[in-house]
Length: 268
Image (cartoon, rainbow, N blue to C red; front, side, top):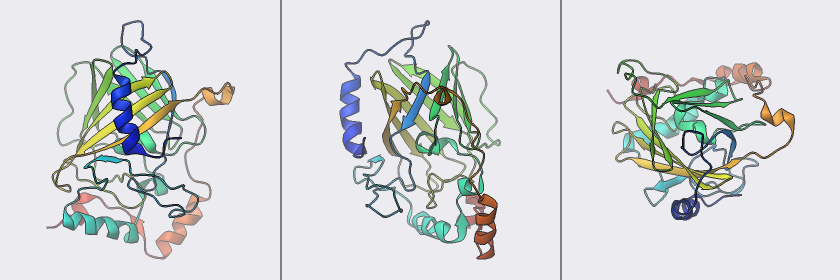
């Protein structure tokens, strides 16, 4: 299991150069299938053994900047800490898994499914009915005033790498459970490249000048699910956390409320 993500990133970039991926009928790398993230991230930076209950120790997902920490503006770093103290994580209240968190959101059985067509790629997973649509044609972009949990994603191929650029994201999402937030000006670029037949190198660069001093990049491995269990080939329903309503009642009784979004907490 990959635990040192900066080391994996460096190795995968080189190894991918010499691997010939399986191809679709129209000649592009065939990403179709079910893929499992190599980390479910309570926190996207370094995790110590026991820091989050049973989560194992793990290196940061952040591969740039090289120090592995988020390049938050000082006010935003303070706000990130306050977010965890005062607000409920969006996915804890069963709001959608937003696009920036898609690749490492925890899944219980069926992983991340990729359904690939020549001009359209669908991503789905069982958690909270999350799905994404990646357009590979030249349809018009969404108007700038429309903001969505999954944003507006457009893909293209650079050699054997699928590149997905996303804009029009909302300001209600977190990238983890500890308050990592962004503004609606955020844009992302994801890159999917085969390292070998059963491993994808995933990297995502986040750009948001309102909250960060520079763009930053995360990386992890996605591994192909090879189970022969027929249940693993199904999209199962996982709409909520068991007894979620009781937990929410308790958290709201002690003063925590859903995260109100960037505009509510940004400096005026």
